[in-house]
Image 1 (tube, rainbow, N blue to C red):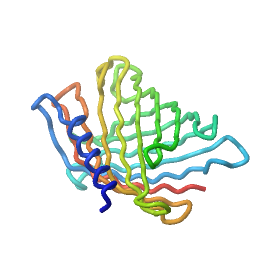
Image 2 (image 1 turned 180 degrees about the horizontal axis):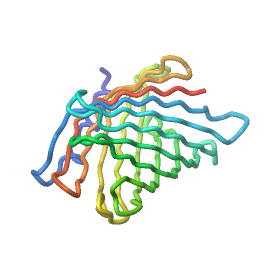
Image 3 (image 1 turned 60 degrees about the vertical axis):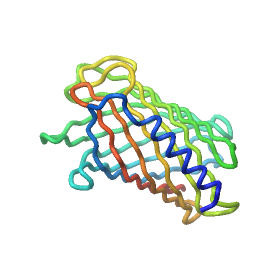
Image 4 (image 1 turned 135 degrees about the vertical axis):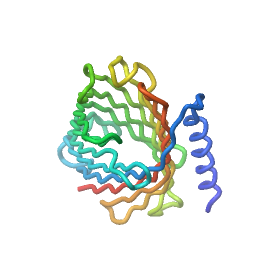
Length: 230
């Protein structure tokens, strides 16, 4: 491992510990698997319009039970060579421990900016969400801010270090969600470009989430993703 890679992993670990360890001892922990498949239109085409789709499978208790499925479609417009605006819709069925299915429908808008920095690529994503969830008392509004950094192992290397930090806040109160902090996600891992249009990513994701009805949760997650660009 290079010294730059060691420094990167150290920063990710320290960030994870500082951002994700709760102040309260009332926390439930779990080990989980999140898998994501994304398809998207590449930037730089003749048209400034772009599209993307995503499917997510999340388990709990290791891989024993399906926790959440996510189907997401999104349409974007390139504002500049570094920034874009997007509008999308998602359908998200979840499968709680007591049984049954709870379906959430979500409309969202997001702004993306990407640029060079620290020898790699820095990406900022700001997302606003409107969430309709079965059994909730009203429409829940949430804002998410993500910072992502990737840096190749070496010049022209197909492997890169990847780190992300994303914090979620609700802006109103409902029966299911309190106004204020909702959750934080910190990820550190490795990506590999297989072909010009296919990238695999794997790593550790720490999720700390606030609960209205019971103890907060900390999930230790193996996150695996595939992105295909056309």
